[in-house]
Image (cartoon, rainbow, N blue to C red; front, side, top):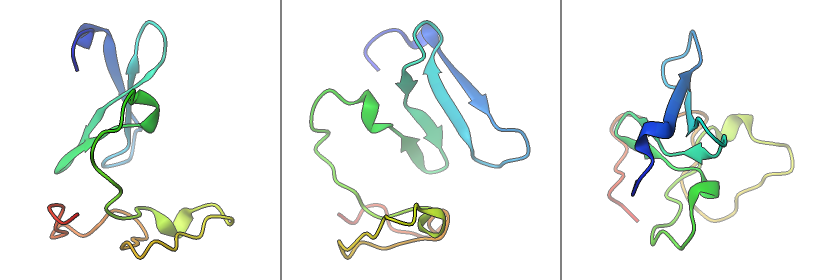
Length: 89
């Protein structure tokens, strides 16, 4: 984040281990959130190509009925296992 960190707030859903949302207190825009082993950045936060690509599909078990990823990437019903190798492209 370049500036405005003081305007970012987060909300954690009670009763969950990981679900939280970070957003701007002034305008409500989504902001990056930290998660175990990394961070989550909503595509709506991006202005330019981030230089990285999708590595896997998470929560594939609860996807919309019309979603059918045929890209050959790993699919996980929920989070990837703790030993998932995030260094692989």
